Image 1 (cartoon, rainbow, N blue to C red):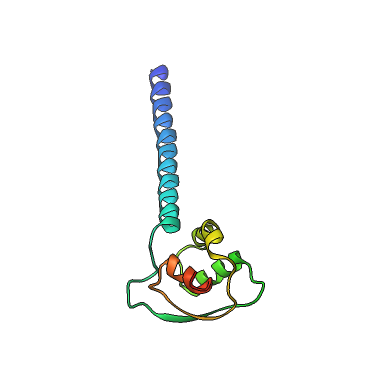
Image 2 (cartoon, rainbow, N blue to C red):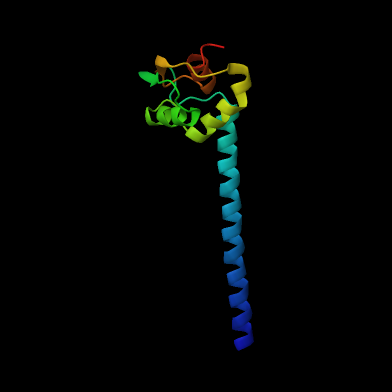
Length: 120
């Protein structure tokens, strides 16, 4: 009887353990998919017409800082995916322009980068 209870307990603990591992793997895959879609896809925060917001970039401001401020203003969904896309496209775009920009919450990452990099 004791051996049977021990076996049942071991099986139940294994099921719980592997269930938690499977759940964790699914969550990691889900996050990875969302991140990759944010980096490579044409997504926006809102559907058109969206909301116009003024955004300023000062001289010497880092790209990571700009990505964080864009997130704070509600213009992008994820600062890390936007920063990654900025780094991937940096060779084609050059340096950030400083100044004031009117950006819309319905703009895609590519459209926002066209504005802040000078329409390259």
